[in-house]
Image (tube, rainbow, N blue to C red; front, side, top):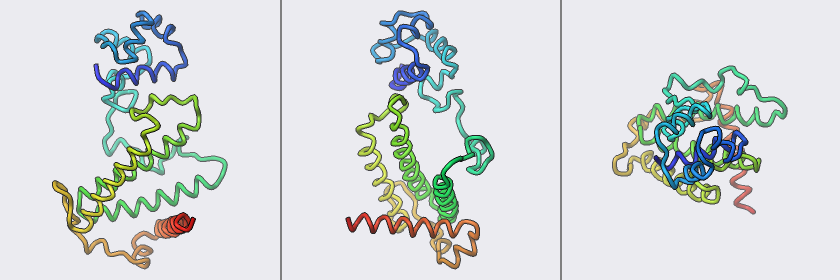
Length: 233
């Protein structure tokens, strides 16, 4: 089948909170055969794939790891909601700290990605974006792991390897981004094409981004303070 199918098959069963014996009975196969499917020892047929998708209310593409969404959809720019779109998932209750930090980060990213658009380098956009995605991935996994009932099979990389693998990938992203920004991109990448458009001062930030500049400046100050404090320890 493929490497993702056994992992996702196991994840769906465990998220549903049912035993292998129960799932096998519901799917019309033996527990031993389901165990082989979940371990990747044997490959299933198309009939079982479709039956499993119906049972767990997911698409075959999701089961095969071809789509991260349970319904099998793939995202386009128009499909992705704006960060400030209304919805219950955007309502944060309780402590003001998460709301404050979310706004500082989101507003700062608005400025960063506007500058990336002006830079005219697809490589720079790609490397910066990949670096930030990896950072979110690492921290999401830390928070996710706080509940021991959450299934590790949501991820393909074992937990003990996550930090080292992601750190190595982030260092490569940073190196490639710095090379592109310096006009000496790695092979196959393009340099910054509009250096003049990236001229930045605190005054220009306030003029061009009146709603976001204070967030960025506060984030920079807080980050440098933390970095300096860490270096002194």
